[in-house]
Image (tube, rainbow, N blue to C red; front, top):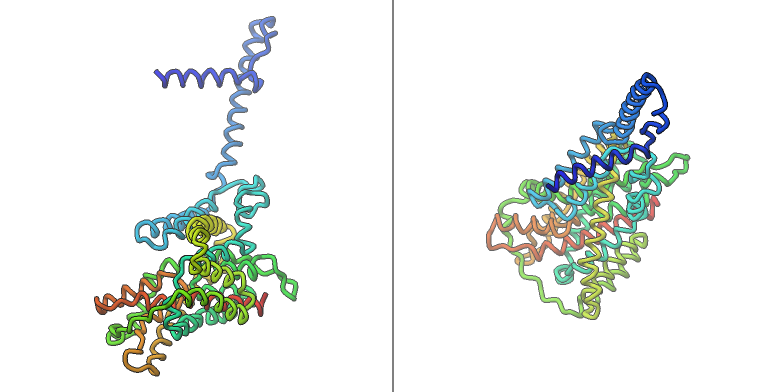
Length: 440
């Protein structure tokens, strides 16, 4: 009964709209001769059909079906793959699901000029994208990371910081590779940071160097590479469990994998409170350009360790970082519009990103083996933890734990691996600051 009422209601509404659309006959037509009335009715009917077809055609021209390109379809499929990997294999779901949805949103075909796309001034997506372009979101992410990070393992064994520094070889190796492939200095610097496996840092640096706004001394404008760089960085962060284990098994012998490290010493609460202040001063004096990232990282950590600002620390590591992650993921994903993203440069960036991640992992592993040449007895370190020198926190440390347990089910390396892992975060931010200070 309800369906019948709805049906007749819709029909009545459509009929009542005809006068508004000027589709009814003039009331004076009753005075015309029968032949004239018949002709007028036919003409009105033909006119109505013609207008209806024109309206349908006009509507179709504004749909995605009329404006779709193969590039849009390819990117939408990539977005679906990201979502599938996040749900099926649990690969960084907090990142890949927002990015995957963003890729789909950014590649829904639309008619330009209606303030729809992320690159159209005045659109909602363009306003949200402002936080990416101006580098606002990354420091907020670092604030949340600082509020959830325990630096105890690094404080207890400071020499493991060298492994985080060694992994940054991927940054400078990629920088040289990008220069070789024809990218200019600022673009190469922004691409290089992918080697640090740190998405927020990659976005921060690319927003400063490769934003499509800066003009080089020769008058050329740098390309806008924020989207490709961010997607590459986050993609390889999510694929840490796939990329790193084969490299670890290739470079680290079975004998080295079963090395058991002595438990780290207990770290007092006073040390935990002093560390963020001292680390802030040391790192920012070395690399002042990294102040927005390192300042927020250690500020968040002090909120956590001070014992007096638990409410602020809780907000930073939960609600705030969740909100910023959503906005960052969706807008970065939406920036991959096919007409802008599918280019030769994007493909080169993805290739360089893969190479840089491999180099960074190898750098950490090989330097750990090198350190063991100078360490004796139970002071030796398990070289597997060198893979955690990249700043994909805490996934790299989890991969190290997993590989350690496979070699010896009683060998727990997670706490040891967290030291180079968090130092990798600091190292990538310092590297970004150094690059920015020279090329910014």
